[in-house]
Length: 107
Picture 1 (tube, helix red, strand yellow):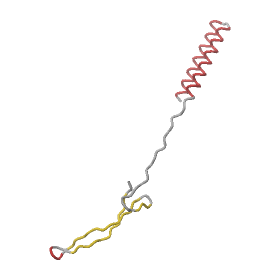
Picture 2: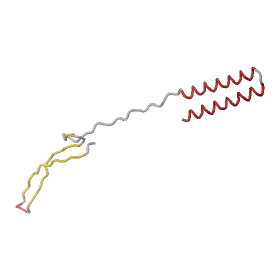
Picture 3: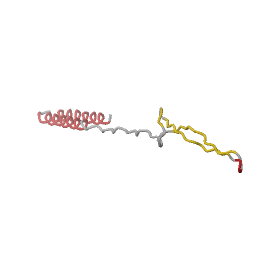
C-alpha cells in the first residue's frame, strides 16, 4: 500500500510539472523534459515495486518426546510404574507394590 502511495504521488507530481512546463515554455524542449521526467518516474516506480519479497522461514515444530519407554498415544504420554505403600506400624508393617499408570504432556 505504501508503494502505491509513493507511485501515485510521483505520478501526480510529474503530471503537474509537465503541464506547467508546457504552459510556461510552449515549445518542444519543455515537452521533451516533461517526457523525460515521466519516464524517470515510471522507472523509479518499477524499481521500487520489483524488490524481492521477504522470505518467511518455515516454523519447525519438534517431535513430541516422552520420558524413557513411555508410549506416545494421541498426543499424550502414558507411563507405568509401581508405588510402594506401607501399611501398619512397627513390626506389623506390611509393604506392597501397587501398579500405577499415569499420563502427562510430552516435551
